[in-house]
Length: 147
Image 1: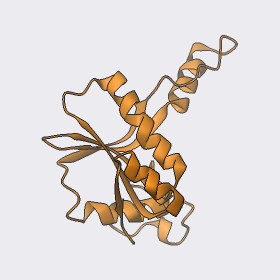
Image 2 (image 1 turned 60 degrees about the vertical axis):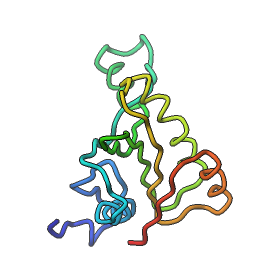
Image 3 (image 1 turned 135 degrees about the horizontal axis):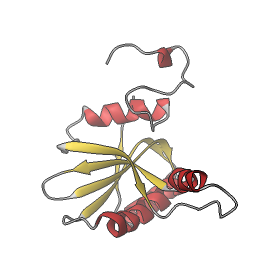
Image 4 (image 1 turned 30 degrees about the vertical axis):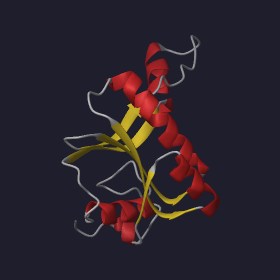
């Protein structure tokens, strides 16, 4: 990937993975280059859940956009011949990521009705120690990469 302005200003959005924070992109790129990446392709920023309608006081277009903007978004969906991976990507993971990886498979199943089993995967640089035991207890794969 060619150099981008993000190297000079890390607050600018990246061009390749527009849904990820710049620090998260570095962790994700490490995963993509690792043997743990067994996936044939990925979908990014996958919308699940109902979203929230701002109400009848707004135009139909504003209401539609309100629902779209408030839907939950899965960072990445990994496709493999034997399963579908729900992937949360974050530099430092804690209970927020745990909740996402617990709820997203349910929301994904409700919307897309997959034929293959789902697997929750955390891709991060660091996991808060008090949350790590909960990830393991929930059967969520934890993959850590240092950029």
